[in-house]
Amino acid sequence: MLKKRIITGVIIVAFLFAALFLLPPLWFSFILIAIGVLGSIEWVRMSDSLGMSGLVLVPAAVAVFSLALNYWSIYGILYNLAGIAVWLILAAHVIGSPEKKLRPLHSVMIAVAVIGLAVFSMADLVTVMNNGALWLAGMFVLVGVADSAAFFTGRRFGKTKLAPHISPGKTREGLIGGLLIVWAGALASGVIIWPDSFSQMFKFAMICLICAIFSVLGDLYISLQKRHAGVKDSGTLLPGHGGILDRIDSTLAVSPIYAILVKTLF
Image (cartoon, rainbow, N blue to C red; front, side, top):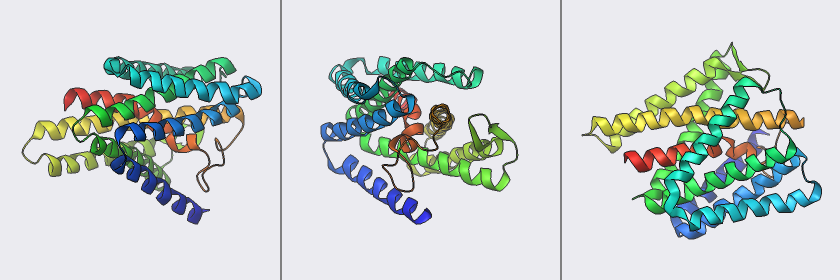
């Protein structure tokens, strides 16, 4: 299993970064939409909504919504804010009433909003920012570091469960350790990138810290959906990893807030 996980992970990273740096932004946007569509199919299956028609209608809605947002990208900041607002509402659900299962129709509406707004946030960042591909690559690295740091520190020092009713493996110690490692890594990166500007370093470190918190939220929310559906993984498309949603859960939550903070502060 570990061997499969490593091989699949290497292939995913190589493909994603090759597409990000070698393809024009428009074509990379299409790849993001395709990933979002695959993730929405898994979401529909987990929520068991709309029957077979849902497997067509919801992915189509995700694709159309993503394309529409990119077409009217002039309102990008508003879309980023909408994405953040959606995740704050979902955070309230995770914290306040995680035992309450959403109606299937509500679940897929959230899927369309969350996936479409995340796809736009990533595609727009590449398009509008100088060195946009590097900024987005930094976000992918951030999500990976946050997830891995929380996992390994949790295994080593974890004692107190973070959300046992949602994801029994996550601990408060893992969360704290992950945030500290992200903060330290962001500061170290800032020293290299902006050696003469403490303010830039600090802004970047704060962005990474805030996004690391959102990455945990994304992970917990998709874990909650899987728990309600009674499944361990969202799918089987990625050997050793599960499904698409298992790999992009944190990215969905991080993308809008990372995009708006980077675009407004740098």
